[in-house]
Length: 367
Length: 127
Image 1 (tube, helix red, strand yellow):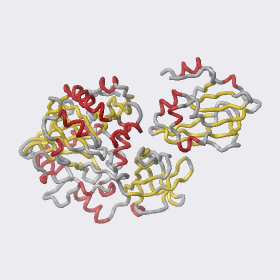
Image 2 (tube, chains in turn orange, cyan; image 1 turned 90 degrees about the vertical axis):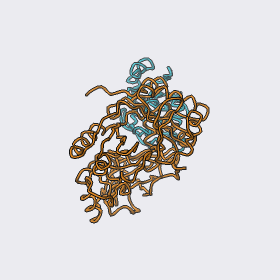
Image 3 (cartoon, chains in turn yellow, orange; image 1 turned 30 degrees about the vertical axis):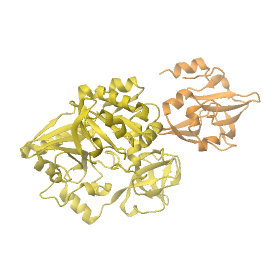
């Protein structure tokens, strides 16, 4: 195994007490003080997350739009400059290569943000599929650090540092500007369900930016937050995570993500036929979200049972510090999406679960 | 990291405090709670349950992981810390006092010599 890579914030994370773990080949902080406290701070004030491990790619050339519309499930032609779009990238059989964000910087000039664990695979996939298009796909992962500032006070913290009015920046829109004099791509996106931004910044200036944001937030409740809080926040918000709610074997139909699949966009796209067919016939299995009514976490792999028979398994499970109970998601037989008698089998004991629609909390990231 | 010198320890990170009446209370160490992170749930046995040294007697769950609890000695459970039901996080904040887990009556054959003293435990808990 190659030794894990380090983000430009490795020293910053370590010096602020980050407990480092190997995550997708990167040495990342799982927590600083307490996952629960970092989670609560993000919901009540703000959290600062190092997400520099995410992959980035540029897609540029005369056929960049046409290529992305072929490679991705969502409709890239609906975007204007300064727009961000969430999309899936599927295999011909409808399984998911990855979920990603597309940023349109100019006509036929796009930036993609990819899951760290999938970045290499994605880039190989994109390069192969790009062969029939007049387009250039470039891995620029090592050019960018990425910092997420998320929470109800995120803008209060950043506005004094910003060279422009962030309050007018719409949800899923981005602007190129300066934070504390440092050039950033400032994007009104995030993975917590909170209002906030993600800041793409040059690798070299990532640490200076993180320190400036941390200083600015010191008196406003800003907490450094690690991967642990990132996971519990995203699950509370009902967001899918690759390798859990979606993967090569769990299609967007099964994951409830058909809103990211534009079946009406002109032309063909990879996976379209398979997804049309699965949608028409109905999926055999579905992702459901559940509450346990207990503090006991049903972790990934835990069997979901109905009257003693196994009908699926948990794909994500964590403790919700806000609800004070364990929450999760599971892949179950598609006929059971409204079942009221499902349970999880924890060490031989059945615990009834309550299926619920995500998000688990009333959240307003657009607010 | 706190390792009180008046307690006995297991290599699995439980502590045992011998009381004057021959009973003992058992919990997990400061090192263990710190490694587990935020504790959200503790499964305790029933009063009256008997265990042999090394048996699993419960589970501590944190946001990150679930870990079995191992009985340090042959013993019978005489009391469980009911406060953990509402406040399992006291195992994090106060592992040697309010975060205790069970009280046991030692069996007559219970051999305390197999347990570690604070110094020996510190060597295990160093990394």
